[in-house]
Length: 105
Length: 466
Image (cartoon, rainbow over the protein chains, first blue to last red):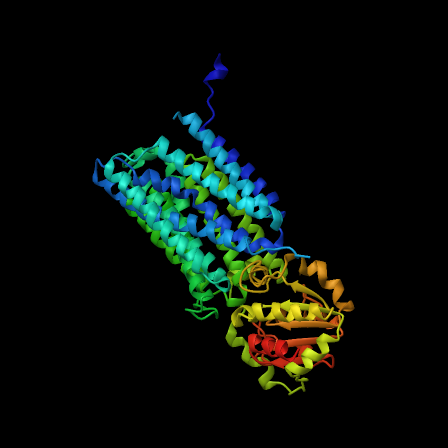
């Protein structure tokens, strides 16, 4: 059972996800109609703020040392920034998309 | 919640983000797409809170207060911002993503155990590499976007700021940055971490200041791309698939938009990055020194009369329309024309405005149905059948020199062939040359009528005259 001992580094899995997602992004974004390029930018802004998960981890660490105190502070500010982006980004996109209408007749 | 199940939920969030971009392939499906994005975000946040709940009461308070503050600010901004200011808003949002990436990495650096990447002072080498890349790109995105914001909101001059030996300075900074990353990885010292941040912040400023106002659509797309790569870098550190997928999506989205913008200006990405093009000061040379050619000036009454008797009018909006907030008056004019039985269409050049798709949003805001709005390739052949091309606040994107004059700096750039229409009407503040600083020969042609004045006032006068 020597094969079982060969464990693939999780990094390789992450890299695979990353590379495949770049390709998915490439094809999905080319299919976005040019009329919606501004909402595309605002919605990509909103979704890239999923970095909020990192802010939640840092902001919620157990306060055991001076290092974790700093981590909390950084996490708290990052959380505010990311949430401005999440709410601002999605809501402004929604506001824009609501304006796109077809001819009534 | 088991680690496997939460990893699965992050994957679901990532897929929902893909679907949110996919929805933008048509306005009809776009609203649903945006909803997918919101659901994905909610799943990602809920999963994190369930799997790594804040450690104590105070941490919960911090998290809830932080979300509340951000949500309140974001919601107010989203509601209040005028559509004409979308480019600077997007730039400001990019800067926040960049800064958040830096702060999250700092958090991970000081409390690595919370991120499962080691212990303080003893972080896994691989995590340090990923982290330092995320930090460098994030910091660069932050200052670059701040400069772009200042330029777009006219708080800073749009003309390029050229430092002597700037290429040497930038290369030196980049080398120093790489050295710091190596230093951080080898020693794990906070000194290198912060040096890395400072160098990247400086590089961000220096990279954007030499780029002129006309190239802003490229810059803003490029920063969009960078904010994605920064998020992906942090995603690797956290081992979070939602973040990796999103980073890759946003990174490639911004890269594609930059490519489209460069292509529409017939410029290479490298020459845009090197900067120095599109200074407003360069405009002075054109008309003043050269021979005075006669341009035919018209009045609002003339324009109203001619348009009412036309059968097909194509409207070409540009940045001037956004500045004058003329989109509503323009829609009113188009409605009057449609009542008279005139066919009205809109033609949009990819680089009209200060960001991709800016004109489409402004027209949508003025209730122009999106199926009357056409992209360059779809409408260029129709100008020959149009009686009137009504150019409002656009200039360089209609310049025939791009097709006819091999010596012109914009030669080869795809342009809207408005000159093929029966009559071309230009609403402009003056006969000055455009953003690229190039004279437009169209102003002096026989079938061109210049309507000088503020775009909004002139359009309102035309509406009155009808």
